[in-house]
Length: 280
Image (cartoon, rainbow, N blue to C red; front, side, top):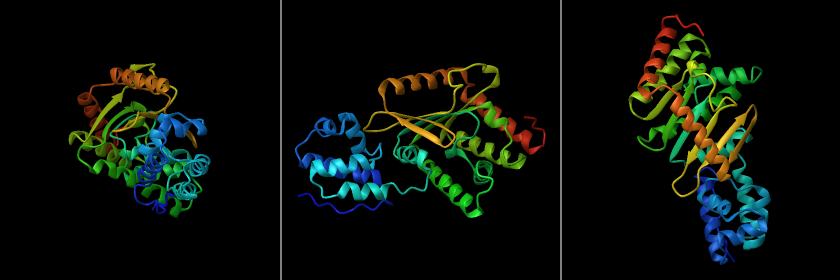
């Protein structure tokens, strides 16, 4: 009987449990499709679990232990994986983001979380939760800034962000906070660490007026898209849906200012905030 050690959820937990799942499945002589059949999921879904791009949920973990004879291993570690520093609706997306090779994101009203400064994030979370304690706000800000360490690597992931002009003009936290936040985005663009575009008000109606959108690509797994609303989020892997979302992002790219013109606008708005001349 297979007897792996319980996993440490602080060390690449999904990649580790995915590797153990692949080992246990192959040890049992099953293909991905054969394991997926009694779970009523596709073989590609099992592949995503093994690649670490999807989180293993408890209902599947219990059945997998029974099918593969792993003596409660996946159930135990699934419960450990469920503990996250992120809100429930975003935890799975944050974990996928951490292993993505490419992230493409349209931000409708806010500077994307990966690009936020400490003071900007504090203002956002305080607006979300006006009665929260300072320690709760500090914990959320710390988690958000920790995510941004993805950009410490000079090349991976490729981050392509399209910011609606509303995200530049909405004064979050005051003029000084906005100036710092926009300078930070501009600095990353000038260092060629990110590609940033601005979708101007003048573009009029566009393909993503329903809300923000995030697309993630991976080295050894199909792409995912993530959509969210207040306290809600859904990670999507349906090929037709993801293809549609890729088209939406492509349409936004076409409607947005060029990266060069976008950078000029971001820096101009930042300068306006610095001089107290910004009029949202």
